[in-house]
Amino acid sequence: MKPFAHIPAQIPRSGIREVMDLAWKVEKEGPVIHLEVGQPDFATPDHIVEAACRYVREGHTKYVPNAGTGQLRAAVARRFEHLHGVATTPDQILVTPGAVMSVATAFLALLEPGDEVLLPDPGWPNYTMAVALTHGQAVYYPLHPERNFLPDLDELDALVTPRTKILLLCSPSNPTGQVYDADTMRGLMDLAHRRDLWVLSDEIYADIVFEHPHASALPFDRDGRSLIISGMSKSYAMTGFRVGFTRGNAAYIELAAKLQEPFVSCGSGFSQLAAADALEGPQDCVEEMRAAYHRRRDVALDVLRAHGLYQYSPGGAFYLLIDISASGMDSREFTFELLQTRRVAVAPGSTFGKVSNRHVRISIASSEQNIHDGVTRICELIREKAGR
Image 1 (spheres, rainbow, N blue to C red):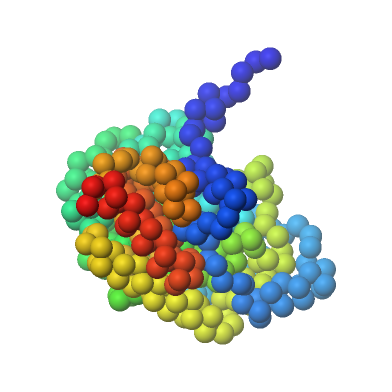
Image 2 (spheres, rainbow, N blue to C red):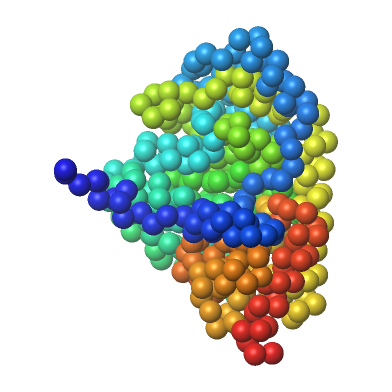
C-alpha cells in the first residue's frame, strides 16, 4: 500500500498521554498518585449538569449552526465585554468543540505552507502538533527559568522574519502556571502591531489566577488582530462537554465558522446551551475551585521549600514546573523512574520543549494530600539521585 502522510507519521506522541497509559498499567499493581493530568478533579457543578439534562430532554440533540448557537455566542460576547470592557457582538464569537479546535481552526484559517508561528518554549505540545498538521513552521521563543518563565520582548522580536504570521501567547501558562501582567501583555501586543503579526492568545485558564488579576491581550488590541481563545473546560470543570470559543474580528469569525464544516460540522447543542447557562448563572463554583487550586499550589510550594527545591511561584492555572536538574537525569528518564519506584505520575518537561527538559510538570488538580505526598516523593528521588 502507499504510505501514510509524512507529517502525521512524524509527529511525536504526547509525553503526557504516554505517561498516562503507563500509569494505568502500573496502577494494576497498586495505587498511583496522579499529578500528570491537566483536568479539573472537581465534578461539573450540579446546576450545569441539570441544565444539560434539561436541554437533552427538550430535544436539543440536533445540528446547530457552524459558528455555534445564538444563545451561547451572545452569552460569550457579553462575558468578554464585561471582563475586558471591549465592545463585543455575537458575530465576533466562534464556538468550537473544545478550545483545542479553536487553536487548530486559527492555524487553518491563517497559515499558508511554510508560514511561521512563534510558540512558547515551554508550551503545550498540541500547539506544535497543530502547526505541523496545517503545514506551518514552528519557531520557539524561550521562557527562561531565570526569568521565572516570562518572555523577553527583545529576544522574541529578534525571531520575527518576513514569514512570521502568528504570535501565540498562553497566560496563565500551561505548563508553567505563570501569568503575564498588563505591562507584559501591552508590550507583546505592541510588538505584534509593529511587526504585523496575528496574536493567538490562549486564555483558557484566565479565571484561575491567584495573587494578581488576569490581563487579557484584548484590551491592548488596536486593530482586531487578536484571537482570544477560551472555553468551559477548566473554569467550570466541563472538559467532556467540549465547548471552546474564539473572540475575533467578524471577518475572521465568518471564515473560521466555514472551516468547522469539513472537520466537525458543529458542536453539540445541549452542551452549548448548558454552557450559556453556566456563564450567566451563579459563579460561586468558579471561585470555590480557584481558591482550592490556590491552596493546593501553596501545599506544593511548602514541600519544595522544605526540601530546598523551591524555584518560583506560579500565578495561575493548575500547573507547576519542578527543577530536577540536581538529579543528573533528563525529564523523561526521571519521570519513568519516579512512576516505577515512587508510584507518582508526572509529565516530563521535555514534552513541552527544550527549555524544560530538566523539569517535570505537576498538575495540582488533585487533593492536597496527593500533592503533598507526590511532591515529597519527587523531592526524595531528586535528593537520592544527587547523593545527598
